[in-house]
Structures are given as C-alpha cells and as structure tokens.
Length: 153
Ligand SMILES: [Ca+2]
Ligand SMILES: [Ca+2]
Ligand SMILES: [Ca+2]
Image (cartoon, rainbow, N blue to C red; front, top):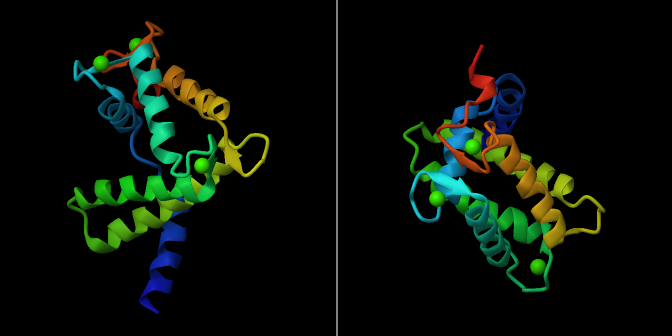
C-alpha cells in the first residue's frame, strides 16, 4: 500500500519538479566521461568512453542494446548514485521511480527505428548530441569553462 502511495507521489513530483540544475548535468557528464581526470572531456575521450559504455551495456554481445540491457545498466548506476545521496529514503524512492521512467522513455527515443534495440550508430548519435549540448563554447571539449545556458537568468 505504501508503495502505491509512493508511486503516486512520484508521479506528481515528476510533473511539478524540474530536473537537476543544468550545471549539475554538465558536471555529472564531466565526472562520468573524464577518463584521464584533467577536468575536461575531449572528443577522443568521449568516443572511447562511449564505446566502452556500449560494450558494457551490451550484456549478450549481440551488437545492440535491448531495453532490458539498457534499463538494467542504468538501474545499477542509479542505485549507486542514490546510495551516495543524503536525501531521505522517501525522496530517493521518488527520484528512483522518476529516473527509471525517464530511462524507459529515453530507450524509446534512442531506438530511432523502433527495432527494439539500440545500434552503435543510434547510440553514437545520441552521444554526440549530448556532447554538443554541453560544449557550449564549442571548443571541442566539455569542461567547467563551458557556460551553462539554463543557469543564466
Ligand atoms: Ca579529460
Ligand atoms: Ca545486446
Ligand atoms: Ca567546451
């Protein structure tokens, strides 16, 4: 019963609350993709990281990411990330439900030809779009030097 209430609360939360601040999104991106730890994500670094990530998600090695593989890998990372937060258990659960729903939606978006699997080309396409979004000063690397448009109001 409490679980049902939590889900309903999460649905309401989902509509009312904005996602993390945009600078948080950029900093998370850098944290996850900066392989050599210099605080900046180069294109080569990003490509290497994404290739590795794809291979890591493709659990059955068939060259495509199924929804189970994609959401499963995301869930594992999400669980770790939430465990590190100091929020209440209830808040974490809300965030978990919200993010999992987003991951499912994202899978549908990434699978552009709706084949039920994300190909390397589809994965790359979404990756570079994300890279370009964060590289706001267009110097070919994502770093703290890239102004976050949404933060300036
Ligand atoms: Ca780097
Ligand atoms: Ca697969
Ligand atoms: Ca940049």
